[in-house]
Each structure stands twice: as structure tokens, then as C-alpha cells.
Image 1 (cartoon, rainbow, N blue to C red):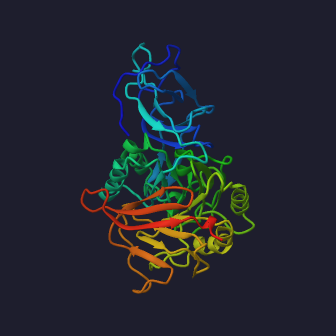
Image 2: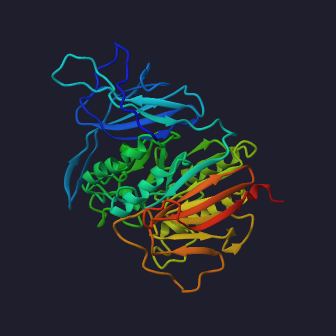
Length: 444
């Protein structure tokens, strides 16, 4: 998105602003066509206020948060104690669908009596009204991290003018309890996240066990504000019970909040699930998923896209047979088949793999296609290899040598197009795998 450097006019009665802000990122609200949440960090406690409008020189509307900015604390035996800056989440409501808005956070000199000003407005575009908006294009990424390869992935996504929103299948900063890495990650992606809605789910690298409290997912829940169903419900682990900060397997209880949620974006319903909480038929997440799938109106949102972290279909040698994967697949795959989920994106494995349409390990044109997109650029490197040199029948394409990201274009109600973009040289449009998806919902 193009950024303006014009001085914006703000109302004379504006509330006291921060001296400076950082780590701006945005995500759609409960209604992605009419709401947008602006998140940012300040060094001092100050008003959570956003000025916005339809012109970059007249930000005549003001939104404030109902709750003040908060900090969080985390302690790790390997990295010591950390307290975050003040984290703000301000939701703009009553917006018009498919409309470009300009916004900024007013800042003030701490030693001056001059009014606060927004000296660099940013812009975003709301989602189209539910049931409209072809074509809609999502960038799909997982296991991003903050390496040179990560930066190239973000740069490529930023250069793609067709992208409407980013869907991230877990493992963002690779903080791994070294909390300042969250700050540096948000600073790395800020040039894109200020203008493009960025939706996320938690992976094992977001679990981040707190040695002093037994809490997990503290930074993830505090720093992001997804279109939540209701506030998060968490149960701490026993203090001293975890040997690793972010184990691949763990018996966590983390429901609602940023853990799992859904939203409509134009012609699609997007569902984010949580691999790292209870997923059996007795779980809160399972009950919520059944209710959510039942309520989808496929005449309005014919496309149903699901994201979570741990893959169900995986021919790599890494991350096989983990409890998070087996429990979730055993409980929920029948739901995906019954309700004709179209495409499922996951991460965790540091490679790329796309399946044919599959149901219960058998090729089935009415089943979902599963895509592992855990090749964003993480610092742990590529997946080690494959279980077998010959791929299983359900595996259509796989690679463990190149980082990259995907794009999903919903072209019309019956067809969508997916491309896997490789981080090769500087050419954004070097595509190694591409496929046309036919919407299974309309198959007899």
C-alpha cells in the first residue's frame, strides 16, 4: 500500500497522545467489511486513540479503546524477566465495505504544549460486503521468523498489489521466550502490517511457557487482537512442569480469544483453529467448530478455508504422529468432509506440500485439499526429508529446499487458483506450483 507523508488535520479536542508508537499491525474485526482493529505499542501509558477518515489530510473521526493499554510480563530460565511496552488495541466500527480509509495515532512532544498531530497517516481497505468481492486474494504464509529469508517473503507479499489480506498458519516471531524478539518481529513486518490485515493462529513457538506462573501463549494473546468469539480461557501448567519453552507437544487449555475464531471475508468464511488446546469431541473448540460450520451460508460464502498449525497430511519425516495432529484429525476430519471444507492450510513442517482432494487417506474429489505452507523463512532451516522417496497417492507436490509463500485467489463461486511463490532471486512471480480448485460444495 502507498503511504502518505502529509500532515493530517485532527480535531482540536483530541485526547492526549503518546510520545511515539511502534509495531503497528491491523486485523479485521467481527465484521471484516465494517470493522478494523489497529494495534500498536507505546513506551509509556497513554490514551488508546486512533484518528481516521476518508482523506489523508482530514482524519475527522476518532476511535478510542474501551479498555486501557496493558503490559504483560514473562520470565524464562534461559532469558530472564521481561515486561512489554504498553499494548494498544483500538477497533474502528461502522466502516463502509470495500472502502479505503486513512488513519494514524496522534503523538505529542512530552515537553511541549502543542496539540497532538498525526504526521504520517497510513491506509487500509475494508473487506467487500459478505457474498461479494470476486476476485478476492489472500497471501498464505507459515513459520515466518525473522531471517533474511523471512524478510524476502514479507517483501514479496508487500509487492503483490492483488493481496487483500494475509492468513498466517502459526509460528510468527520465533521468540521462543526471548521476548524482545516479538518487538523486532513486529518492527520487521510493520511496513506491510500497517496496511494489510494480518490474521494468525498460534503454533508451538507461540506457546512460550512462563517459568514463574506456568502460563502459556501470554505474548500471543496480548499482542494480537483477532475477531474473537469471547475473551480467552486459559489454564496454567504446573510451575516447573515444562522442560522446553515451546514443545511440539503439550497438554494445553487455551480456548477462545486468539485461539480459535472465524470471520467472513467477501465470498469466503475463514476459520482459524488451535492445534494446542483440546480438540476432541468433548472439547469447547469442537463444539464451537460444529456450530460455526452449521451456520455458514454457502450461497453467500461458497468458499470455506481453514487454517491451523499442525498438519494432518504430511509425507515429510518431521513432526509425525504428534498428539496435536492425531487427536485433532481423529475428531474433526469427518466434519471437514461433511461440510465440504475447501482448502486447509497448516505450517509446523518447514517445507511445502499440497495434496490432492482427500478424505480419510483416500483420494476423494469432494474432500478438502491440504497445503503445508511452513516455508516462510524460519531460523531452523528446511525440513530434513521425506518418509519415503516416493510420495503417497494423496501428495500432489512437495518441496523442502526453498522458502516462499502462497496466494489463493477466489475467482468466482466455483473456481479458485492457488500459486506457491518461491523466494528465488527478486522475481515475485516465480511460481513453482499452481493449481485450479473446483468448489466441492457444488459437486453432486
